[in-house]
Image 1 (spheres, rainbow, N blue to C red):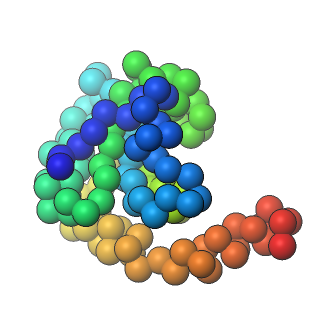
Image 2: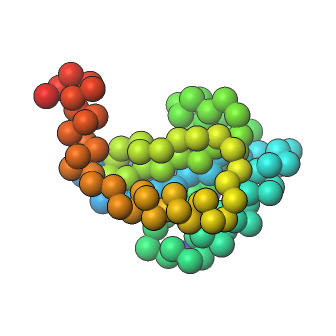
Amino acid sequence: MSTVELTKENFDEIVPGPEGKDFVFIDFWAAWCGPCRQFAPVYEKAAERHTDLVFAKVDTEAQQELAAAFGIQSIPTLAIIREGVLVFSQPGALPEAVFEDLIGKARGLDMDEVKRKAAESAGTV
């Protein structure tokens, strides 16, 4: 499945909450952005290689409300949501090798530990 267009209308369907086991990569981009166009083929290749993961793209011009909800201030920005938790968000176009390494690290996260630390920092534990 290559990439899917993520909008505020389909967000809940593509990015399930904490009960969902989905693993979603989100590329925030715009057509006028040179670094975004440079990162696009790297992102597409990763989507083709990792068919078990969801790769979504948010056009920040068309989806300003969604970009604002994620606090996007520069593009491209890559965000990773795993099991309803934002585990990574960083601006900048990544080289292919760095992106592949990041995918491996995201796969290796202990989500029970991540959720425990998030609960502690939120003061809910």
